[in-house]
Length: 565
Image (tube, rainbow, N blue to C red; front, side):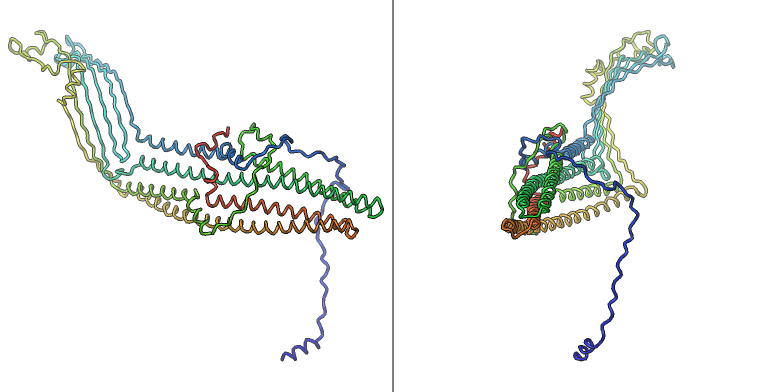
């Protein structure tokens, strides 16, 4: 069977090959704009960074850049302000338990018509009465729902009624009232809930601030290493420019001696111009990265750092040993503020559920009150001309006498008050329950749903952090591998370039190949530089993922953003 198939393949004629038709491009109509354009013969200027002094350079260490960001970064200053506002919220919520002091002075005057010979003024005149009183006291609410009030009052009353035996009179009263919730609002109530929520919110805001700090420090470190790479790239481009100039001079000498083609000198000159443009672009990148770093370490536009020509002085990171993935995740779960934020959200939902369940109970309040009264007055002499005289003193001599304990001013009134001669007390039980209680039931269902959501959010946060740990570790290991490969490629490119240059000097190579090797070497150096920068940033990301970036940099939330203005 195999032989027959082979024979058929040999003897059968091949199919005719039909050539593919050449494509016909369909191009849009394009207007003629600036025909024959050529750049003007602009003279190159000495490149400088805009807005900074060219010399001297100002060295800046990574720790200094981070320290400046912690006290001057505008984002961190706002985050620190939000944290302080959240803690002010705790004090505001505690205001529900403040003791309220009340003082009420009052003056009353009245003139009324006489009603009969006894309830009338002298000579059956109008009744003139007046009160001068002052009431003061304290009231408030306790954390477990009790409400209380303590009031002290005194009143001086004058009255010209002829039946008065004491005028003026002095009244005083000291009262105590306590309301104790027995079911609803007992143990958990709206003010207590608000205090607990404000504390949780302050903690969550603090954790959010720490997360913002971690992200900001990472941005500062990334910008710092970008600036290291930018300055190093300028050096690489300048080295490539010097090599291109040296090659140009060599080709010019050869062309003048007739040992080389004049076009080689032109080609070398074109390479010099290209490398010069690369230097300008590299310097522009330095300016851009410097401004990015400065915006992260200074908030005030008048800060002297804006006019400084910054040069990083910290050494490049030594690549640490990659941690085990399980250890990385464990550290992240322990240190990341986002985890504590999610736990705070769970606590908040727990408080809401507890309050909602409490509001399902009927309201049963026990109210207790006690008042002790004081009374005294100035004795009005009783004369035979007084209509009351025959009733008070039916026999002569008159033996009627008001008890001495009632004679006096406010001092005597307070004396009878303290002796509790005239007490009053009461007790009441108040029961209330809305029929259906739909509001409380809906609030409980809502709080329970939010509680389930916070559990889902916590799990989602844990998954996200685990994914970040995976990516950070993978990025670090890949960056290390690329750095090793880039270093080998740069070493090889240097050897190839040196060999090509020797060949050119011996007449066995061409200008094109030398320039090609120069370009390859510059690219290899740039690739190695980028790989080193990627390693630096990968180390920073590992620190952020594990949460070590906060402890390693000594973050103090009390001084955060303190010098932003």
